[in-house]
Length: 346
Image (cartoon, rainbow, N blue to C red; front, side, top):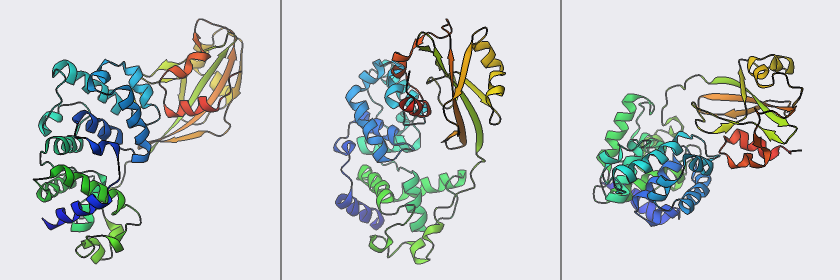
């Protein structure tokens, strides 16, 4: 199809020099695709190199502890990706004898691998003609073919996947898939696309109707949830503190300071009267000081977290056994890591 040929010709002349494009090793491609889910290339590049250096093979990744994996992932967000990556590495090593799944259907059995990642790895590494559909592909197809079905609807997901499969170059599916994704990232961008020099501008529906900004169509987002976090940064007289491991939620298995979550912003009096605070500092003399007067706002996809760090100076206690010298060894959410980088330990 002319559409595919034009995209591929453009790609071969304009593609970025990315490290994972020099190989068809499925472990490497899988790793890069997981890292780049919901992550910009410039942000994910350093994490890719970090993982390749520490875990050059799937066997190395499988042999690591989850804590090691989460620590390397720290700051990248969406930590379930890291946990699933580690889980799947162990599955490949222990259940598949280290043999990487070599088909779209087999790849889908890996935890954390969906249609897009399975299609990318299968096409690039094993030349299987299965089309990728990500945000870039949705945008290119919606604009070029004038599709106004919402891309985040069940009908839209099916329609765009069907179309992408129809137009794929079956002889060179890996190159085709990389071409359409790169085209969306560099040429058919969300804002200010380069329509004047676009090789498809003579046949693009959206451009012909002067409606490029109207595509792709999305259904309205779910309401953003607001949460208020109050972290207790403990400083005992013997230079100890306390962190706890989250057992569920957005930062599962990462570490954080003792947390008091409230419906609204609270003051120091409300803080010290809270049940969690009283249990933690029972019969101890304390001094409480607020580190940040204005709540720090941490924005996630469906929630905004307003955070205050309360520094609590107190006597030594068996409740507080972690040395401040060791705290940076633990994987923590970016929110906590940013605090630790600013906080001067006395």
